Amino acid sequence: MTVTNTKFKNNKTCTICGKDYISKKTPKPEAWGGGFWIVEIPQCTCEADIDVKNKSEIRAKEEADYKRKILQEKFKNAQIPPIYFGLELNSDYFTDIRKDEPKAFAEMQWWSDSFRPETAKGIIIVGDIGRSKSSIIGAIANNIIKKGYNCLFTTFGDLLDDFASAAKNDASINKLLYWLCEFDCIILDDLGHETYNTSKRMELAFRIVDTLFKNKKCVLVTAQKDKIEALKGNRSLDMLRDRLHTMCPHSYFFEGLSYRRKK
Ligand SMILES: [Zn+2]
Image: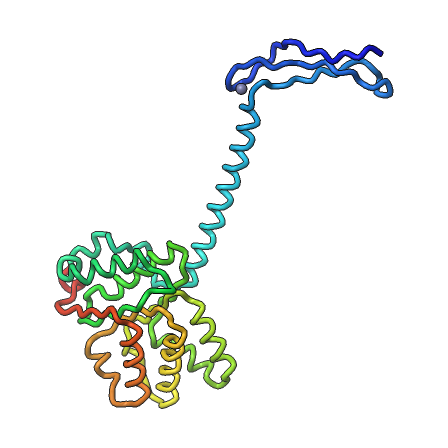
């Protein structure tokens, strides 16, 4: 058989750049019936490039879907009350408090934007009813979760209830403490609203706060002035307050009428 391996011009062109393909005539083995194969070879990389582009687009979409799923999971785990869903510090919702507390507000905005769990020090906002304390903390939580951190939004009362029902068993308390310390930021909303009807409950409250303290956890606390004042006179509660103040060097006091009443 004569070996022909000739290239010749073909009518086929690249659909993207219009460059002509070159066809190559290669012999077919006798066992396969002999004759020739015509192989068409593009003279550009357009189609190969598109293939790479499509593949990387598919990969990017998969990555985005995965990130979105993780984020949904983080928001679910955070247990943020639905009234704070989607709330952002720069939204109109905070116009009044931004005007009344410009320094505190700017500091918290900066805090939220530059949050890193290894270095962030806690915030405590004490104030009158309806001064947007919880909404601000909710908006901060939304922001840091969007950055990929894990946050828990709870009241100290709810947390204490969970611990109290596990209190019969030390192993389950340790498990709860471990779960709590997995979060990058822990929000204790409305501190002082919880009841301390037993000394066991006070001990438990101190143990929770002490664990967060020893693990250098970032804690955000809101409280009404009179409620936090009431956490006094008992050794466990005094120590608890003391720990919280150490953990939350960013301390703000919002005084004034309720924005809710004004609206
Ligand atoms: Zn081309």
